[in-house]
Image (tube, rainbow, N blue to C red; front, side, top):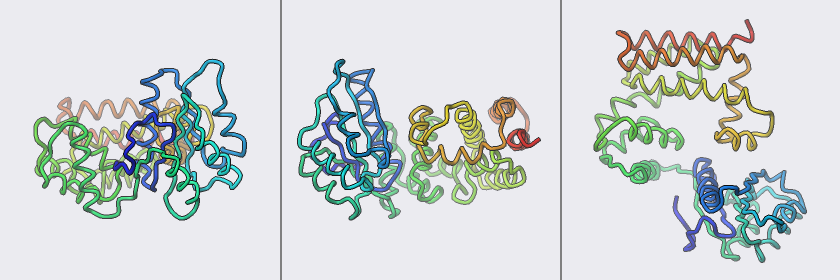
Amino acid sequence: MARNSAQDNPLAPVTIAVGQEDLLLDRAVREVVVAARAADADTDVRDLTSDQLQPGTLAELTSPSLFAERKVVVVRNAQDLSADTIKDVKAYLGAPAEEITLVLLHAGAAKGKGLLDAARKAGAREVACPKMTKPADRLAFVKSEFRALGRSATPEACQALVDSIGSDLRELASAVTQLVSDIEGTIDEAVVGRYYTGRAEASSFTVADRAVEGRAAEALEALRWSLSTGVAPVMITSALAQGVRAIGKLSSARGGRPADLARELGMPPWKIDRVRQQMRGWTPDGVSVALRAVAEADAGVKGGGDDPEYALEKAVVAIARAARSRRG
């Protein structure tokens, strides 16, 4: 993430994360929260949407505490704040409270530009989170991900990853993490080809999504295509496990807004919305059955069985059936 401000302290009184790339916005928030909790493990984090920050709310959240607790106040879609609330925020920028970090997420367009200008004038720390629409930008992002994890990848490997996965930064970041976890030494084009050839058309996440939605035929079709184009079986079991665990975590969570559940479960808000749609046919017993199926498939693809493809097919069918358990 590029910095547009010389100030590079995550605990600066005010941080503005500017842009429309959700992954980078989430990371900007996480960086501040991690720094705050490193300074004080009991830091109170309040993550609010623009409609939750009403006139007077910011004053309540930033009023002095008897316990002098550290607090992080995150305001998403700050460009959509009401005129009266913007007045409150601008007033706060002139005299920010001690032990409180305000994080404003702003799309960066013309709407709400007055607030953005005021934050910049007040010396807020700024994190750029632009949409990466150019292939060259996504390539630079992949290279920076490998560097951040302390690993080296050839230029050809980075380009192959972008070509295979496409424009989704979350999937690109996940792919880098998976490669770093699985592969020792320098990551080259051959490794990427082994893992991700054909990912743009049929990713392991597509297999998992169709399975947890109970669409067995489509999941099997995506599975066979993925395997035929070189996607590593271990990537598919990993995606299946993530999909089923997300169903289990959300089904056992308290109801609430996506932002609240995201904090509780450690998922981004966009994923909460997707999983809510996928979990309609699931029961607790179904989740247990699906997790056992994933564990068996994982053992099968890692040497516990003679036919990894058959192990994956069994898991996909079992998960799809479990997804329909509520419907009988």
